[in-house]
Length: 500
Image (cartoon, rainbow, N blue to C red; front, side):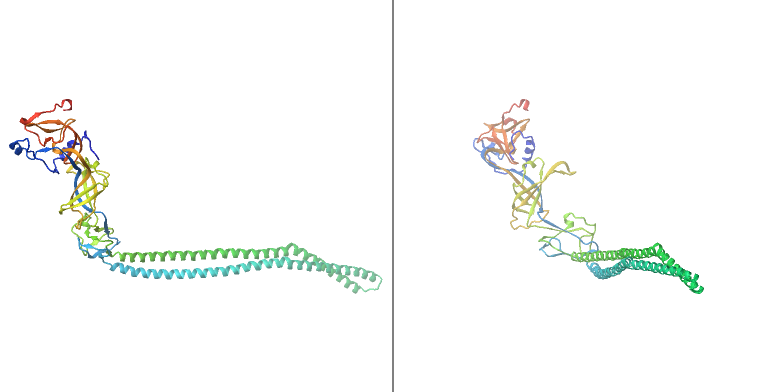
């Protein structure tokens, strides 16, 4: 980002100019007497055309780009019996923690017995279900046979017995009627013969008795027809239909009862399956818990205890063998020290200059002779306050990835400083930031004028914490004073007027 004249933060930048100035200072000798050279040595700067870098200085600490957190996943009875030393470097698969597994092994044995019992219960319920299915089929077949027999009995009665009975009764009526007619005529003949004295009284009486018996037989035959049609037939019909209906009802009742029993057996089977599944899951869970008793490193890195990373530790109980852990407790961290990030703070006034992808250099307090190349990964979205010590301060977090560690084994939380290169300014006239002054809206500098110094308005362009580009008001070779001159050396001052 290029910063132009008229920027309201120049006052803050002037203050920043009080920091270390990068570049070489030029002490004048030509045109200045020896006394002046000695008194102004290091305070004069000859304007040249050249290049300088606009950088944002910052500081912070190192963090790992990739960090693995190790938590206690045991649900209960997590007691450390073996623990890797803090600060040691481990490889993938190395044992970090061993937890006491005695109670889990006992739980696994009990769970295995429960699984066996649940399997036996399921087998028994499945066998009972099969038996109930066969019993249902057998009983329903018997009941269906009863219905079929009752149906056939009804058909046999209605199509056979009834017809035969009616024919029998009709024949009996016809026979009785013919016999009656025959005897009636005989009796009349006998009466005539008796009157003619050809037949005895006894023979006449016998013929009369026979006629009476025939008449009674005829009446009986007719009565039997009436009784059968009005009573016996209806009784037999109701009885046969009742037998069939009872057989059908019994089939329905048996079907409902046996289906209910079969459903109960089916429900029992499903319940046994659920119980078995629950027991199997419980066993598998306990076996997984057993595996969690041995915690291995998922990747290579350095071991850091949670207490060293700000983890919550019970007071007076450091992480060591014999320590009881609660569930999901943060125990260890394994930062990947081969990929490090400088987590630095940039003041809110300078945060607009920083963007992702900018080049940076990083130095660590622990290795002051090593300079690491870096690149800005991200700039924080929200500013963070300075806390109670500096409530008005606002900083943005900037992450700088170290591109090469150059074989140096860095560790998280190491203090570091960084220079973020915002822009390279080339082929311009520039002065040290110390030389810049502002009065109201006017930017000016002290320029050597004969034996003294005069104020001169300048146009400020881009600047860093060390140098500032000037686009007007100076020329190549001008000599600038980096401090306020004594009143006796002031040749000319600017009339600021309303700007002042």
